Amino acid sequence: MEHPDPNNPAPGDDTRPNPVGVGENICPECDGTGKVSGQTCAYCSGHGIVLEGIAGA
Image 1 (tube, rainbow, N blue to C red):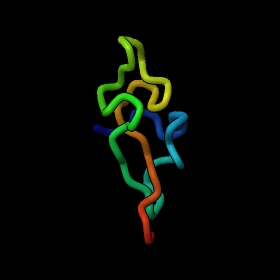
Image 2 (tube, helix red, strand yellow):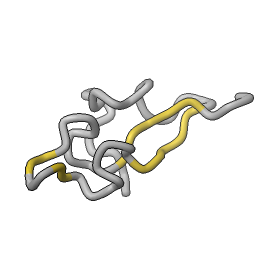
Image 3 (cartoon, rainbow, N blue to C red):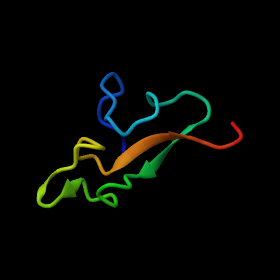
């Protein structure tokens, strides 16, 4: 799944897309569904993914 808006990161994103040392991961709050209790996940903005730093990069 592609992160929809690189200029507007989700609250759970560590950084914006495409810098060296960053990768996509499944959102830990919604387990990648984009929903929590039937509502849009606030942590990933409903995308189901978050951007995180990659260890050692």
